[in-house]
Structure formats: C-alpha cells, structure tokens
Length: 127
Image 1: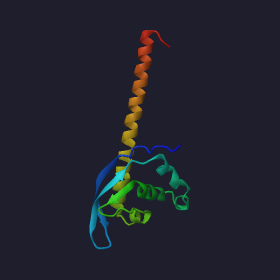
Image 2: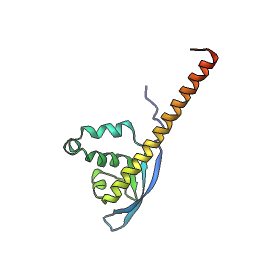
Image 3: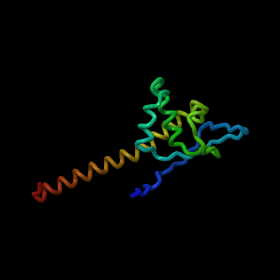
Image 4: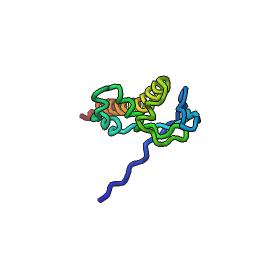
C-alpha cells in the first residue's frame, strides 16, 4: 500500500540585499525559500563538515530550503558559500522568521485551546 504524498510545503519569496552573481555576470537577488521539515534540520547533523565546524549547519540547511535564487534552481552548499556575508545573515534571519513564527503561533493557539477547554469542563463540573 503506497502512502499519499502530503501537501507541498509553503514557499516564501525573498530579495537578497546584495545578490548572487551568475557565471554569465547576471545578478540574482529574488529567490524562494520553502518551509523546513524535521528531516531538513536533522539530516545535516551527521555531515562530517558540520562535525568539524558546527557553523556549517546553516549552510547545509539553507541549501536544502532555498529552492531558487534568480534563475538558479540547483542550490547547493557551494551556492550558499558564494553568497556575501550580508546575504547569508539575511537568509538565516529569514529562515528563522518563516519557520519559527508559524510554529510558535500554532503552539500558542493549541495551548490556549487546551486551557479554554479545561476551564469550560471545570465550569460544567466535568473532570
């Protein structure tokens, strides 16, 4: 029995402050990042480059979730390495905002719902 694939993760557009210079000299600044999966965050932890230099985790993670920069669609760790420090920090901040805000909103909402449900049961004399 085969599993149905889940819905495609949400994607978010961004504009790099400096941009990636292509081999033909074209400057690519507009890009797309998808939401990270648990696998995206776990898989790089076994990479030897991350074990030697934990800061490399960000490079691998961004290469997994950035799906396009300009017309460049094959985003590799080397692609991320070739970005300016300004663009790297921008993408790291964008990643955190996109992935953390959605998760935190859902957790907060779920906590509020559980609290409201519990209070309603108490008022009705249920346990």
